[in-house]
Image 1 (cartoon, rainbow, N blue to C red):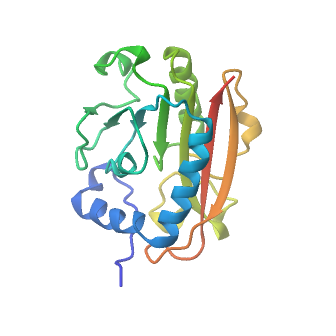
Image 2: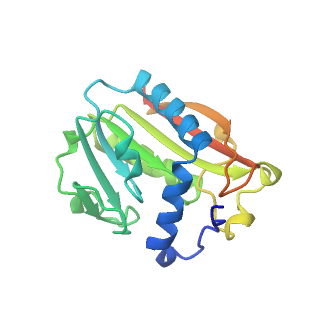
Image 3: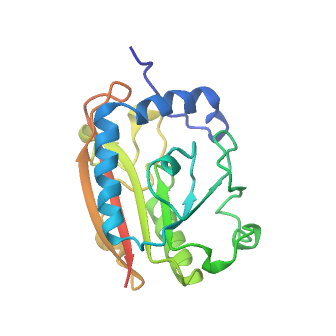
Amino acid sequence: MLEQVELPNDESLYNERFYALYREYLQEPTVRANHDHVFRMFEQFAPKDLRVMDLGYGLGEYSLHGHYTQYAGIDLNTTGQVPNFVQADYHDPLFFSRIPFIPTAFTSLFSIECCHPAEEKYALYEKLFKSIPSLQVALVGGFFYEKSRHLETVQETGGIISYQTVEDPSQYISDTFSELRMHIQTPSKMFGDDVIEVWKILNRH
């Protein structure tokens, strides 16, 4: 039986043990099937020249499930490095200057299961779309527990703030991109049967 995961409420605790357990979660049949469905949907919107910047990439696991022309991971944590890895903090005002890629290097953005408040993430997406003219589409995702869907804090997973789960989407209408949102029930051995994943495809206007 898989070990039950409790997401740490301290970023320093995202260690090799946590990521090893989380990799098992990503390979559970229901989780894998749902994620494959989402990625097929994303590819309908994404440019054929799929050059991806994965922001908060964690394990780099999503680099394994797709056909990418180029893939680069950006994260504070160095646990799951991919070949093109940059250690950087996107809260840093000098974030863009610390990324050794030209602004036109990417056509697509991933930001999946990064635990930060929605208003911070949407502000960052606006900044990225405006600062990277080649960026056409983004795939962002997170999850919450159905019985706590009225809360922004997922208490069952350590009290961390869910970066975008049940927020009112009308608060984040953008002049830069439109949003397609999908809610998918994703039961798993690791997190239980009550998990709803929220996936969003952000498409440049």
